[in-house]
Every structure is written in structure tokens, then in C-alpha cells.
Image (cartoon, rainbow, N blue to C red):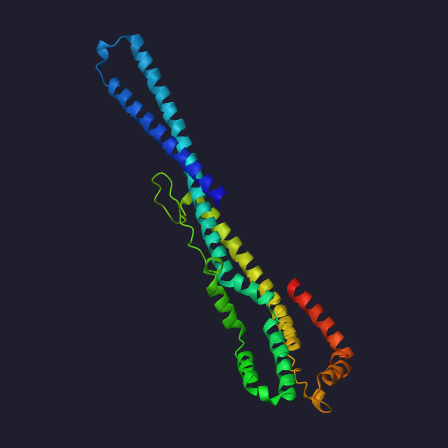
Amino acid sequence: LLQVMKTYHMYHAESISAESKLKEAEKQEEKQIGRSGDPVFHIRLEERHQRRSSVKKIEKMKEKRQAKYSENKLKSIKARNEYLLTLEATNASVFKYYIHDLSDLIDCCDLGYHASLNRALRTYLSAEYNLETSRHEGLDIIENAVDSLEPRSDKQRFMEMYPAAFCPPMKFEFQSHMGDEVCQVTAQQPVQAELMLRYQQLQSRLATLKIENEEVKKTTEATLQTIQDMVTIEDYDVSECFQHSRSTESVKSTVSETYLSKPSIAKRRANQQETEQFYFMV
């Protein structure tokens, strides 16, 4: 963005300089024409030839400066259009990052966190309810807290706590240069065909990207659903561990023998890690 802005400013400055030189040449031409209007019978023959030669030189100089001004003006228009297009694309990218991408990144980083926390706390609740019924009041408070876990609300509160990091900044504004008040893309005849070609190319590219993104989205959603199914298994009920004895050592022994030592746990974790790696690579 900075580079195209500098390029636009440079070409616009050259355009202004060329315009100034052209106006200077026009003034010289008008001055010379005014002098040529003097009565010729008072002018010597040699001086007449000198004036004619001077007029021709000024006309050639004016033609060169006119061509230079037209060339610089065209470059300035193209550079300004490029700057405006880049400016709009930059603003759109920044907006997309803060409004969409940051939220998606947070979702990727905490994927499964709330579900895992839910399962862990419910396991703790199940054990405590069976060990000591007198603690039901405290456990009810924790259960209510678990029931209120909500990823979107937590994410929203987290983003609101740090507005400087997650709120989009102000849009980049068009910086006009030396009186140039045009602040939108112009399709004048010299650049109209180029803009139309670029528009068609962008439309074609967007259509291709849309198809690709739809395919990636389908794959991502399917993988995400698989992960969510894995991390939301309701296996937190450990009441079977308390059927024979309520002592802590008995619970530890029962859990080790009947719950944590199951081969399916290791296999499930391996499948989950493989699926998560695939999800992050999509």
C-alpha cells in the first residue's frame, strides 16, 4: 500500500510539473505571437527570420511538452487507480481479519476446550456426589457453572476485555496529493479497457476461489463435526466405581482397572489427535 501510494504521488507530481511547463510554453508562444503582430515594414529582414525561427522552436517545445504532459497525466491516472484499488483491498483485508479471521483463529485454538472441561468437571461431580452427599450444595454450584459454559459467550467476553487487539482499526483513508480531489477509480478512455480486463480477471479468479473455498469448507465442516463428536462423548459418569466401596483407595483402584486402562481410550485419543492434525492442515 505504501509503495503504490508513493508511486501515485510521484507520478502526480510529475504530471503537475509537466502541466506547469506546458503552460509556460503556451505563455511564451502567446508572447511571441504578440511580437510577431508588429508592423513588418519597421523590421529588418534578418530580424524577421530570427522571429520565425524562434516561433518554430517555441511550437516544437510546446508540442514536446504537450506530449510529455499527456504521458505523465496518463501515468498519474493509472497510478491513482492502482492506489485506490490497493487501498480498498487493504481495507477489506484488515476488516476481514478483525471481523472474521480472528474469531476463526480463536475457535481453532480453543477447539474442544469447553467440551473437555465439561467432561472433566462432570467426572469430578459424579465422584463427589457418590463420595459425600453432605457436599451437595457446593457441588450444585459447580454443576450450575458447568451448565453455563458457552464457548461463544466466553469468546465474546474475552474479545471485549481486549478491544485494542480484537477491534478493527479505522479504515485507511485516501491521501490526496497536491490538490488532486479525485478519490475514486476513474474509467477514462485511456484506462477503461485495462480496468474492464482487470475486472473480468478478478471476477474469474473470485469464481474459482469460491468453488475452492466451498470444497474446503465442506471438508472442514465434516472434520470439525467429527472432532466435536469425539470431544463431546458423555463418559463422565463414574458411578459404577462406587458400587462396592466408597473409600478413596477403592475408587482409585476401580478407576484404574475399569476406566483409565481401557485400550479404547488410547485408540480414541490417537484417532482424535490424527483428526485434529488434519483439521488444522486443511
